[in-house]
Length: 221
Image (cartoon, rainbow, N blue to C red; front, side, top):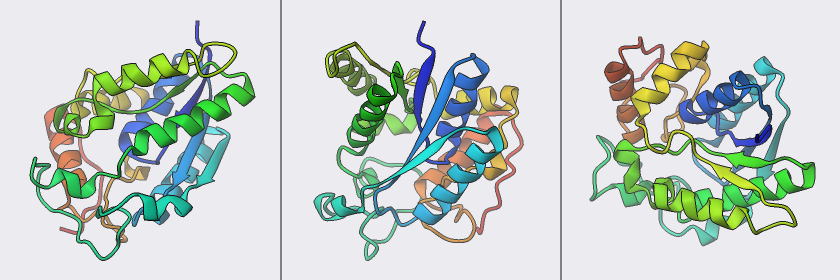
């Protein structure tokens, strides 16, 4: 049984439920947060820090801001580009895509897991509209898991337990576990409150409604 897991933890809703999920299953966990130059990094990293402190989970932050110039034109790391608003759509989702972001994060997580003698890295990819992101698809998660099995002297794993579900399922699981949803951060815009208009805010609002769980998030609009 895999017992020691590094959680890629942004401080967002999905990764926070993931953290609570593995703790509830009895796994030893550590959290990896990543600063890749995202415009909402202050809010994300603060949320991650607060949640890990609440749980007493060791957390490390890796600075990848040197890679910003390699990420090309996207609204998350290029501050002169506006963040798309409205539901995720085929014509706009590319604007909020940081190329190969999850592979980079998972690779660092595997490096840390290997050095710790841990067994796996887990991330919160799930189905629904997010399946438009290439690195949130089941095929990607399976490929990364295959690479993890041969990347070290002993086989490691990449785990994506929510990959076949949707965000509403994650919220229901979080509600069962008592996750403090109000402490999590999703918005890409980087303001003091969730903007309520960007794709991830719309996705968050919709998922709470679909899950039948009260949304404690404060939205600006």
